[in-house]
Image (cartoon, rainbow, N blue to C red; front, top):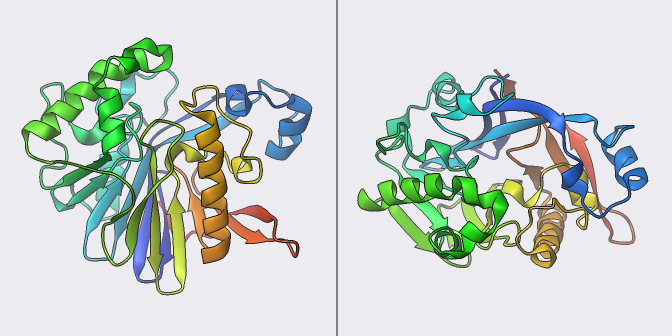
Length: 291
């Protein structure tokens, strides 16, 4: 399975895969007792393997063709254990979207598994030559600073990220912003900092429908109900918790579905409130089409 599509009003949101891996993800629940998090995620051993998708989303139907997050990229095949590595362009083609059709790329953050397809080769040729690439200004400042090199998790990928940023900047395609950013009548970028300094999410709202593309604010559906169960790699844990709480509250108030690039395809989280106002989630698979 390389893609799954839902409709949000007249807008289509397609989760597209750039590869799938299985492995233990205990670090997603750092600080939580395994006896608490294991039942919530349906496993019986802390080192039980999880299915993790790498890729992003394609949003169409609002007058734009927008990619939200761009997978591992053309070197995805070098990632150990990654099946169907580098599948994002072919998954998009199966949806009728070619690279030249894309006019907007939104990066929730700049970890290497989210910005890989900014370029299509080691020479820095742009994958999406006609697209404006939108990145929060705090994110760009962080990845071009010395600070990022001091963090072991980011150190190995920092050079790749900088090269990709340089390529899109030299092409005049980089646009930075702060705060909320309206992309169209149906799409708004929301600040959800914490996982990284400039992490953002995207709200798609069209008619009575809404969806939140949460980036790495959420790695697992259980994180909606348990915002304090954080991956060990969070840049600012307290901000991450606030961002998660904001996403869950917004989803409940807007009756919005939550999707995230690392959720297995097809996974959608529906959110509502209990009679006492507490936010709760249910995972569903109500996709329109799976290919």
